Length: 299
Image (cartoon, rainbow, N blue to C red):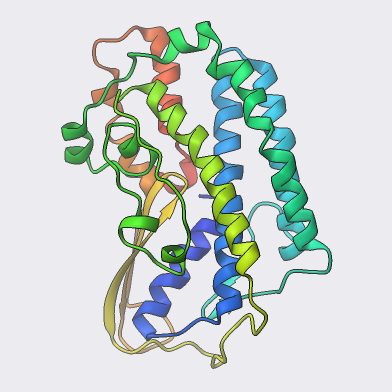
């Protein structure tokens, strides 16, 4: 998923570290969470902007990309990249925050929180937008589970399941945040889940910034990583749902087997089920509500 590569990095290193029994320094854990939640906001902003554009609302596209660019500036400052970061490392992270970064991050959060009401004025409270989404692409809780959907697709069908809370990894169990859940099971609910998740990510980032300890950003690691022979499945909550890595090690530096469970691939599989009985014009909204990234779907 090249639109949420911080999240992809996070999921992989969690899997390898779990296989190795590797501890991660506290400061590195906080840095990981801060960047992962910024990535969640950036991903949802890109989704909302392009989703609105698909439905004929050009203004929301401009607004969302304005804020997303600010997040990419923060990513560039800490990693040197704006898209594919390769920032997380087995045992920690590549770099510490540069001077002034924390202040810039807090400034962004203060700027961003009042922007949600602006988005609401453009789309949430827009009767035409509501009519395009409400009662469209309905997929009830049973079918969502049967199809193996996750993330906002799952929570928009009334199922309160978020790996950050239900199966915590890293240090997510230390933070106070809500899991947005809506039960109308339609495109409208998927929109509302992602809208609310951005605000919850802000809460997590603020707590992580307040708790950020001093210390090392990476554990002492050998130059060549050789996990012990064994297998592991580790899952994390990416912006699109459950991102799982299944690794089998034979004790060498290269994985014996490596399988990725990408959320968009699973979520897209239910598209024909969501399309049944609706107008051709609804197809744009239904497909858009899935929030796919072809980089993690192509096989």
